[in-house]
Image 1 (cartoon, rainbow, N blue to C red):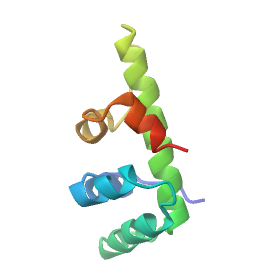
Image 2 (tube, one colour):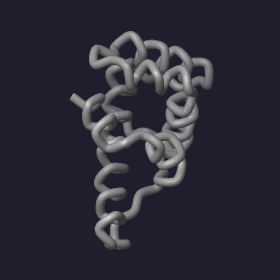
Image 3 (cartoon, rainbow, N blue to C red):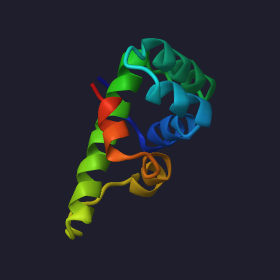
Image 4 (cartoon, rainbow, N blue to C red):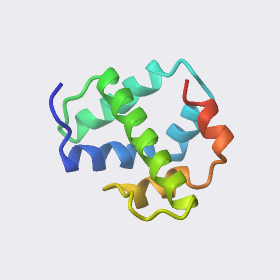
Length: 104
């Protein structure tokens, strides 16, 4: 699909940082409906993405965040990513087992 721009990712993260969305994502595995909401909210910013694209991007960001985070935890500073701080604000509070539970 079309590459996500920085603004699109920012908008996605802004929606994702909504406590309501986070609770829904943490509480479910079948999350198509949540990502349909996310896609609808992106639409309001003029961003045209379907729920599948949103979910894929979400999973990729989360995965990248986790690998950077665990690299940092083991003392490596070589790994970094663009939106680490924003994601850390969202994901940093939840325990790793919670995070892996909501992954599959």
